[in-house]
Image 1: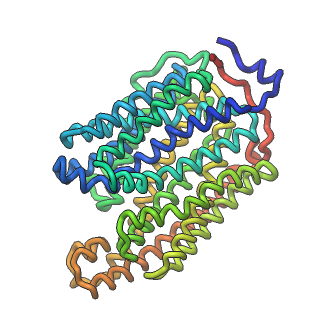
Image 2 (image 1 turned 90 degrees about the vertical axis):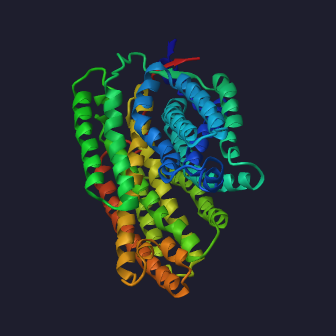
Image 3 (image 1 turned 120 degrees about the vertical axis):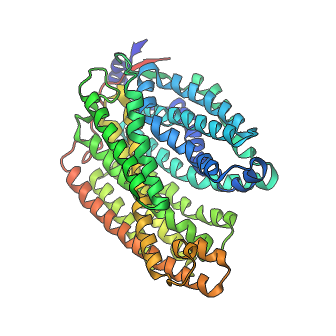
Length: 510
């Protein structure tokens, strides 16, 4: 084992062809993990026919992946710093492959739920490991910013791609094929990563704090679950108690982290103000991204009357702008004040929401344009604040830093769906006539299911009205985010100057 600090200082080396090739390989697990969030959109009807899950089991087939992913991110980030990010990535890739095969050939709802949970566990190892490796492979600030920008765009694009790819696969194969597509990519990863990617880990990690594992899960899972349930069914006493329980456990977790030398989340991560600011601003960007998806997908299907496959294909259109936004923003930030570009990203995203607020009941191109503008602004923010947080965190804690960023995204996304969903639902319900069936007064899908043309027309008008109010709410919050970014990033090294010297690198082994 050799320390990379001296060689880095001596050579001032830039990443070369080997590192960029390794980076392309590391995009594979990122795409697959983000795709698995949406890959079941088309497969559920076929799964229903073959496995006949109950309504509760169907919900768990959908949700257990995200819950396992969110609950274990912090644990896996800390573990990667201790045992090695490459090693954990390979373990996760093997687990992800095995779980994909198990899910593809599941013969009962329980088996599929278990396989989806294991997929979430594997995903939790892959995401912080890949970002942590990117932090260490690209020691030059400019190159790392470019890599993180591509990374952010790939993650956003993977979610949109997952639903479309699953629809294409189901046109020709059985529902298990949507899981088997993971296996070749993971096998390729298992072969190439040991050859191309060096190992990085904390040379002095301390003991692993096993008690913090259930505490971190007990803090994250109840809050994410309670917020998502509130978004779907409204905030009631049960969901409020679940969220409160998670917050209480979270207090115990934080107190334990602050009082231990071998804490899962080291205090040194927060010594630089840019790290905490990056997590908060990244969560706000995820809030807007996931919150907007609450009504844009429904608009395509229930207002414009598209099939699920047609809606998924149209939803890919904004991804073209998103793919270019992050690298472009990174290039601009390397020539000017990064804090200003982050603020501009929030303003651009707010403008996208403002465009959505102008949509009527037949505004496909306006909707797609608004989504493209909004998503471009959000991905700009995510790419730059992620790079800021990673660059200000100690390199030996890169995976822990990445796991906190991604956990913040989970919280932000859940809150976005809950808050903007609640605004939209309240306006929709108020606009619907009291004589309408209860299901029609709750959702537009319920109105469409009645088959009553006049009620469906009223429901579409009410839905668009609710989307307009939610979009205005989103725009206001994002403008507040721009102000918040200007305040938080003021005079933070690395926010105003992207050419700060890289800190000492952690242990590197080949």
